[in-house]
Image 1 (cartoon, one colour):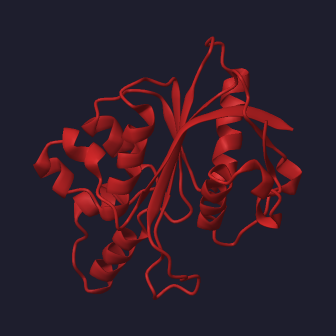
Image 2: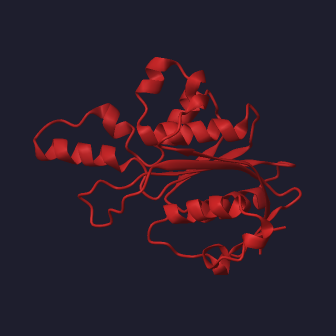
Image 3: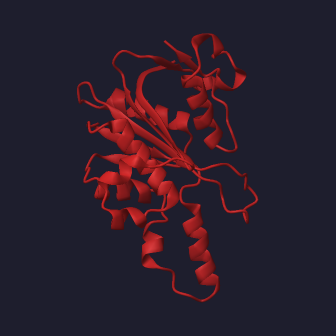
Length: 212
């Protein structure tokens, strides 16, 4: 059973303002894709001007709309934009955050669910020699373009939290985790679970998580 402390959980949705991005110059802010804005906004909000020792970025699809645009350019015998290419890779948002926020904290980028990202954070915390270490976990996703068979419509969002081992308030049963084809459901279910009262936390889709 994995035991961790989850704090400063916040979620950014497509229909909401991204106020935390005001600290980034407007010209650079305008160049960010919609999903990058949500991910970085959530990261900044969770940190609340504090620092962590490691960052885990996680997403199932990443910024797939950019990849589709690159493929469309190739099919039309056009040279893909170097900027589009460099910001389409799975760790692009992690890099953009590091540059724009001038944050050199080590990080990793995973094709994973929210719960899988929590396990990654837990593994890092259990193996680091840094005392009282903290990890920022950021999950973000948006629906694939309709051309893909896996397309399922949902509103883009990002969710972030700070994870530590001190004073655990969450137990995670790895063997009970649901394996969603669409990993964004795991994050939305967790947000629902986290904001429910204790007597409402026995729903089947959230049985892997228990507050402690």
